[in-house]
Length: 279
Image (tube, rainbow, N blue to C red):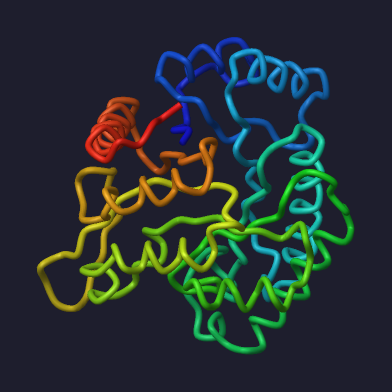
């Protein structure tokens, strides 16, 4: 497995980016530039990563391509197409976005229409339009799992794979984002095992977070750093390693460099306890 995460380096400096990744002990990373960056700068980052044997795991396309605002939707689709083309150009493992949301005010927020058959069909149509416009040769377009939009389970992801029917559509796995109830929280080992058993061959990249269930009414779940919650990393890491020696696991959503060090230390400790090799 390859552990990765964001680093606190000067943006636009390829050497500083790679040096910070190496200092953190990371062997994978999300690409820090967008499609509209200077082409020489993009090439410099790719070359620096390759020279240091750092895997560019994903290119983010964070936007809302199923927005109810048509102008927002079309701009997001174009961004996804451009980012997927960038991922293909630089040899990234995947281009990742969430499916979006029908929420008119928050691009990644809950909405009554999100988990409906009409929205499922809209996601299928949208993903096809992104992939078909680019026709990538190497990169995959993936949707990050989410608690209130498809794909919100292994089975809904399988249904999307079947309906979208494109060889360059694949899976992005974020187990914390699947935990949306006490049942899933307390039995997250089974959730992880089920997801990887059903979708393992399609998984291109993973996010590493953690989660806690607050002791108050009503149900309240909080995202926390790895090691400060209940996610079963002892189940997750060996199963991911069985998929590929190069499967990337990227830390995210932490505010401070010290928090990333603690999170990485926890994952490395669990890896040692479970005989998982972090390359």
